[in-house]
Amino acid sequence: MNRPFERLIVGYKPGTAEASSDSAASDDVKSKGKSVHRRMSSGAVVVDLGSKTANADNTIQAFKNDPDVAYVEPDLLMQPFADPNDTEYSRQWDLFEATAGMNVPGAWSSTTGSGVTVAVIDTGYVAHSDLSAKIVAGYDFVSDASRARDGGGRDNNPADEGDWMKAGDCGTDANGNPVPAQDQGSSWHGTHVAGTIAASTNNSKGIAGIAYDAKIQPLRVLAQCGGATSDIADAITWASGGTVSGVPANATPAKVINMSLGGQSSCSTTYQNAINGAINRGTTVVVAAGNSNMNVANFTPANCSGVITVAATGREGNKAFYSNYGTRIDIAAPGGETRRGTDTPGTITTPENGIWSTLNTGATTPGSETYKPYQGTSMAAPHIAGLAALLVAKKPSLTPAQVKDLIKTTARPLPGTCSGGCGAGLADATKAVNAVDTTPPPSGGLENTTDVAIPDMGTGTSSIASTVTGNASSTTKVGVDIVHTYRGDLVIDLIAPDGTAYRLKNSSSSDSADNVVATYTVNASSEVAAGTWKLRVQDVYSGDTGYINAWNLTLR
Image 1: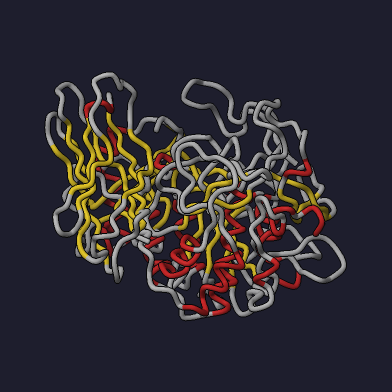
Image 2: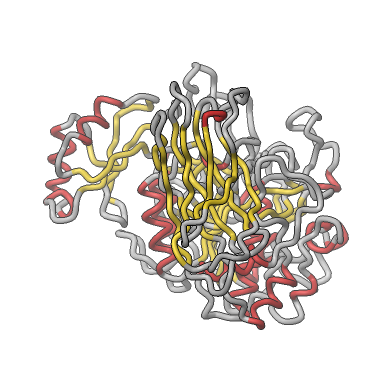
């Protein structure tokens, strides 16, 4: 990880004194030389380390050695997934262009998002007339007064106070370099995201929102230097109707959550617990994949189970040059490219190819409202959040899993190329909305994200249980994400419920590259889809080990 942090999140086992008693938790933390910052809605406590560090191994180990502790993990700061240096309907190619648009206008004849609230967990909201009629009461979850810029910690005003930073405002990285490396202006990121989802439409100004009759609930978690995992997790819980200590109940719980944020890390227990709670309460969670042109498996909360993870495409239909990729991607959506991949970072050379949305002119504090183009998976995710709102508005009984399945099974092939995996393809809003009426059976789209070791000269097996009716497809898709040095050692098979093995990859003594990140197509049309499917990975040569990081299966 090697990223600075200044707090830990400690979860105590149910039934222990520390799990329910603040004084017991405080005494335990003090015995380890630290202090309690606060208790989270999950019951876990946030522990102050006293200073920013990239290494708290001794303290972490002390908690791990405590039999009353269920888990301990750094309270990492997440960052907005948009380039803050990258800066109306004819410009919204992402909604309507035949090549790489998301085919949104055709959906509006049957649903416009009415009755659905979408929570935007982001930088908050800066007043904009194209959004003002759509805003419902949100909350400011930024608990650090020193970063909040509003004179205090948490409160009921989610106004975006600006996330501008001077070089070095956020300390230094693991190599001693200032963070940020240079001055940065305010991004007004949450307002840009909100506009894509639900900007007022047919009002003779600005842009059109995808679910333009939906409501936006702004939740502020990102401020100067980013946002804490503990704050974001509490925001997820509250947005979906859960209880957060010290925060009034949410009068308008969201059926959809958009998180255009993240950081490089595995999915923490803190995130997964909050996401599980939201999904169990019936809220669809949409997350941006990240802008590092790397495997999304290494970025959270995009790599958490149950979320809809969104990659970004450009105007030509290719994976955007910056977008993360991999088998954990569920779907692609327009994220835009305000510059070419070979152009100098921070420049704007192709603004017409960006995603236009609501913004503000203020370089630091709020100025006047405007519209500008951004690029990023942060811009792709709200396209899917808007589509999810259209689906839920049309059929309120849809579960998060059904929303995810509808979006994936109605996607069209990516018009361009994507190396590394862009999920089911490019989302098609009209097809997805029309499919609600036909009530299609589940397609598959199943996954297992539990790590399974592959021993040296041994076998690792991971299972997925399917309840899909009928037979599997002649184009069954198997996406694998395997971490392993010298991948030529590996033989990979898909095992059907009846025991039939389908070879996906043979071993090769000449393939010395690391890792297997690929999607394979199998003719499994003779197989009954229901049952337990297995991914079997055999290491047939000595000297290297690894593990199955994740795999997914689309049976139809």
